[in-house]
Image (tube, rainbow, N blue to C red; front, side, top):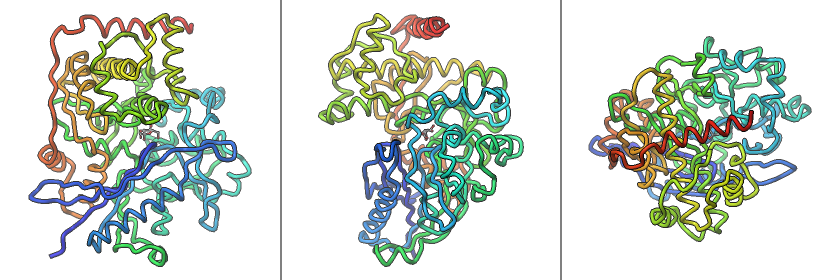
Length: 490
Ligand code: LFR
């Protein structure tokens, strides 16, 4: 009898980890075996990821797993989306990948859409307009470099390629390029030609849940590694997080709360009509033919940045404790304002925003944290109402997963303002979804529906119910605030 062991490699913008998992008595057990920092740094004029280091960390994590006595595992990789590696005909990367937060795509949407209407792109792809989508990054890409490029690989696909020698383009992540056609399910020629790339530059498209291959033998000369079979999971971290959501409630929505807050619903058919276009909702592809109808909200990035600027003097838990001592809603902030995407200093940016809008300026760590948490909650509640109108039904529960699901303060505020039941957890939903797709591929779990029942039983999921009339009119006031801002811009 061989115990089956699954490993999720989950790399986000600020950290990466290897999580080991087993099914024990029909319950998922998780154990973090390795954690490392991630971040971008300015190299050769651009903010770039250190991709070689990330790959080395994966191998170090695998060595630890071997040392712990596991000689054979399967492994899946997920990371953030949209970014890519340019690879030459020898299979070598041409440069370190540029981060989506790099300033090169400022104003790119406008430049690219002068002769190609936004509406046209949206009808084709159903993808929200974010200036960092691969489409705009390629539009700004160095043309000489592109000419030398044999293959364009998305980050997790590139990592899989270095580990196995086999290259694919996994669709959940590929959909975030804003270059896949909803109708054909393939890259759209017209959009590709707009940014001077050819379909043949992308490795072949595959669904989440296909076997990629085994670790390259040569890696074992440098590292002491277990037998490792790599499975292409839902390689976009958000797609894995949605698979890893318990899905509690009749008409549930999810909020994947990490560096970004991704709020939305799982759909079986895309929704790319007029209203979805106007509200800039996306139809990113999910595992098993689903669509992730969602919106990006700036999310914990704001808090991660504040924490860093306070020299990591306080942990997230400490910051939340300090915030709890402050009253909520002391100022309104449009947390999705572009200015918070990559400011030189987040704290001053928030303070300047409050100053310019004539509001109370948060000063202490507790005030700053409360300002961000209460405005994130407002933003979530507002989006849930928008989702209701687009989908034409009332969402009755919100499943919050990811690191942010640990913030009780925000869970409760969101339940109350949005007037929905909030179910919080698992906080490692991304790793869970990564592992679930491996288990389904290996035939250990039948499908996602059953997987979600297993998830509900395996983790402690906390329920938060709305407190009636606690903050009367607050959401309406916030909406008025957001609307006025739009008016001010003309
Ligand atoms: C979350 C995420 C979002 C994506 C953003 C950029 O980690 O993957 O889904 O929009 O990062 O890739």
